[in-house]
Amino acid sequence: MKKKVLIVTTLLSSMLTYAQESSSGDDQVLKNKKGFEILPKAGDIGIGFNTIPILDMFLGTLNRATPFAGSGNVVSYVQASNNQIVGKYFLDAKTAIRVRFGVNTLSGSFTNQVQDAAIMYQASLGTADDIAAASLIRVDDKLKFKKNNTLLTVGYEKRRGYRRLQGVYGGEIGFGTNGSSETVSYGNKFSDQYPVQYTSNFNAFTVATENPTAPGRTTRTLEVKNRGGIRFGVRGFIGIEYFIFSKISIGAEYGWSYSLTTRRGSKSTREVYNNGQKGPEVFNEDVDIDSSEKLKGFSVDNNNGSVFSMNNTLGGNTALSGGAGALTIIFHF
Image (cartoon, rainbow, N blue to C red):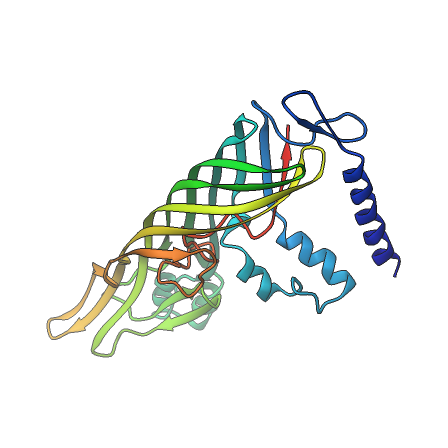
């Protein structure tokens, strides 16, 4: 109850402040009751970020049935804007250059120890004590990975309006890339001399015992270049901004764009043990896992069902035709 009273009090205070604003001079500069300018001017810089997660957290504490509450709605309101910085530079009070920029990377490694297959094989030719001692010797299986998702959008924005309420419109051009890769090095190499290998499964962090004595092929992945691609788009947008305080605004916008997306196919390198008619052999082979794609066309913002929506390697929707956010808070300096 106290939180709801606080919200009402804040709204009433904002309305009283609005009533006490003044416009001075021939250029009609809007000021609050303390004489501070409310709207941005030439040379000002605006920095913004998506407010939906904040609203979800705040309104969710009041009532989980609010329209913004719940992680499912958060996804539907924004288009990958959580991973972007939104900035503006004002050429004059009615014109701004805007930029959305995001460089998101992730890399790392996992190491898992397994029994030394070569030592175990040699010990198997000896005594029980030799086998017991060899079972304590370990070698490392190691996986290394890296992922990236980059987006740069530059636009031109015009605005018009009355007092605190400003309409914005314009266009922007965007370019983005994404991709990922991984390599695995195994402590136990495949061998045509001894049959038993100990291999890590990094998806489940378990150890599998390979026994390639049976006829046929046994394979394991050494390197994978996963699906990635390049995105390009041209987008028109229209929206509003309301200045709740001096040089602080809440903005909402919607857009329509043309997007071009290309994706390369995945490729991998595998280690192969082949027990064929000519006897055991070990070799590496390169494999094209799938085909490449090229998609193009028009789409409105937050169209999650669009074919231009890609699931990037960091998770989430990477459609270039997404807006900067359903609601954005912008600070002007």
